[in-house]
Length: 377
Image 1: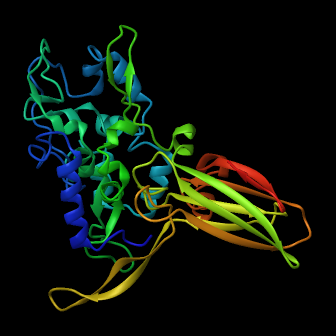
Image 2: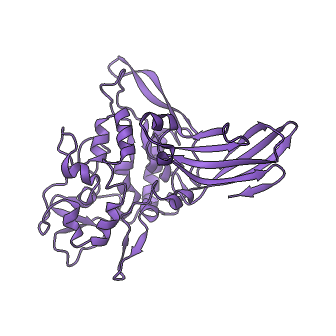
Image 3: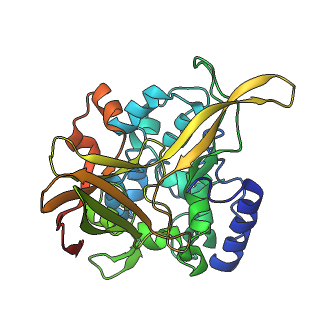
């Protein structure tokens, strides 16, 4: 799955999906709230009735939500060790702006901006008002109703963006129209968008607190949740003998997901592994691949531009057929083992940064298949 569609067609698809899938009025009112990492986010003054703009100020009334957020990747957006290791490899300004969005412009993230990462105010405060999907009756602060908070378009402001300019590297890169993160576009072309299933429906499911009230979970389900990851893709395995070889067919079927598997950060990848000898597995990487291509810039100069040259990830339901791979082994064994793993970063990179495989690799599905039989996991 290389670029899902060319850029111009993608924009049309995004607009179409938004018009079909978003709540009434959700196409208006969010312009300017996010900037795809172009700059830190200025949330404006502290709304009247709030003591401060940090999460603890919100926790006095929203204790359950604040506790969910404390355990989320939004909270650890800047401090997460795996992110920090990746940031060392590509210390882009856009990364600072997205992972510590309330830092002072031009400054390194510090204090609450670093500690809180993507915090309550990042999404919910603008210009002295608290943004909410509801009317906020009885709230001790001004509330502006923004139905788009419940629509995928709201997430796109941070989870869909092109490669920014990269300065200070050996060759550097100009800004480009090549998506660095493509999650929203993937969603827009999936069955989830056509069925009106928003990002929030999966990543922020409704939960009930001790008082019986419901709200959308702010745990932001994702790569830290094994069951959630497992639900995104399933593996069908079969094996047959072909002369002196055993041919193993592994078919990856998308499950309950609205985007490719894996998605998001470029360092994430899937690995499909099969082996007779555990020390010598056959490995298929599920990832986007890029190359630096020389291109002429508008001013006539030449520069290296990052272009996608391959995408072996599992496409979302509704976009293409499930992926199938045949792996061959010269063996007389009657059984072959296999696994599907999710990696936060490639193994060589993890080793260079001092991370163990246990820290960056999660085995989602594993099993074995008899050469004359077939199993599904």
